[in-house]
Amino acid sequence: MSWKIVDSGNAKIERRDEPWCTEAMKARWTAEIIPRYETRHGALMPILHEVQHEYRHVPYQAMIELATFLQIPPAEVLDTVSFYEEYTVEPVGKCVIGICQSIACEVCGHQALLDHVRDELGIDPHETTEDGLFSLLAMECLGSCDTAPVALFNETLHENLDIPTIDRLIAEARQVGDGGSEH
Image (tube, rainbow, N blue to C red; front, side, top):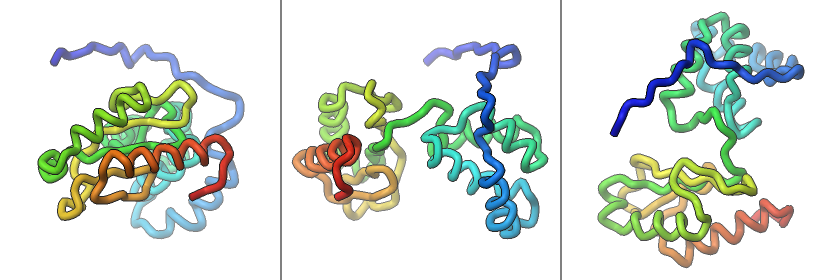
């Protein structure tokens, strides 16, 4: 492994005229989320979850907007986004497949599942298909070791997986992604 040096101090942040954090979002956060926390900073992660789900990533401009809204330094928002796997700075697919790679799943054959999905979709972990439909993640323990191997398809946990089940789940996600009905 090598260290990559990134000149982040001089990085240009792409901006759009329309804010990512809309007035309606901020009003709802103020009414429903912020009151649950002792400080505004406490609301950062739930709000980041909403931004991630709304836009399928957390744009840098949105991080700055959130920092201003929550009255915290932008670096604290970036630190949180870059630390947790839940958040991404690049858009993820409409269907995020997270295959568990914990020791239990490893023993129960997660590698065959991961290799199959990699071949089926033509992407490696932490990549997104060109059509924007799928992203693949290799994740740490999903907390279901007794039903290994497991994977998340978006936020739904699927247990005791095998290749035919993975193929069915991918086909269903393709149908939904192409405008088909939800399964």
